[in-house]
Image (cartoon, rainbow, N blue to C red; front, side):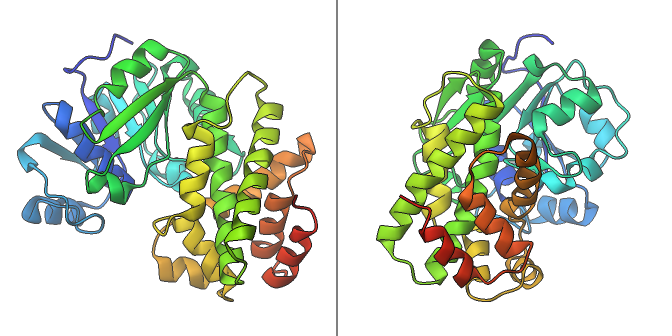
Length: 334
């Protein structure tokens, strides 16, 4: 893998709101981008109207600087940096027909989810199934909502990779007057924290619908960061500042913001929606739904005290009353 430069060919793999926001950022600093969308009809509409037909439609793109693909092998072959922005549950399916080797690519995860059927974080998945060295893997961590990036509101990202030099080189492709970056080598902590904060946001949404007030929400978030710390420090014990933006900041924006799909999902569950009806009405993927089961299964090995995760699991997988479970949770929080 050579150094990352302004001439490195970057591919966006995904077509949702975060993929669209990242494409906007990359196009500030690169001559062109490659963009994979599975549905040719969406590509045709994008070319015709100059915006994503389904997400962040207010962003207008210079189509001459985008090479669209619906062939996963071709875009991988034509790119040096692969930025994956697909829902974690669908990553395997996205790569099902990929036969091109990625061992010489720099792979970036902007997924913030965990891969079901194995409970692997994204870096582990690429390492185990595609022989990708961890040094060629990178994580984009928050706190950052696509909607605010699209509006050029000041935002901060953490770019994490064991190869901090390449992480810095890649970060320069994203930076702008409204986007600042911080570099980290903690791919494990940032990925697991990004997974766990979605579960915590579901709990925040449930409690909000059950009319627990701001006082309780503050206690919930305080306990949530402690729960995240217990987990990431057990799974990957290194020195890290859990109060920094990649961990605490990402938790807070996901737990409190009205843009948070996981908080929205939790709010609907708290109002009495079934999981299926909430997913259908949102028409978006709440990563925390899949993450809850994965983390619960992983914790069978570690046996970490995780009362918030257990509460969310009991509500969305065991169909126990949200009111009862949240009431029980209040007895554990301090």
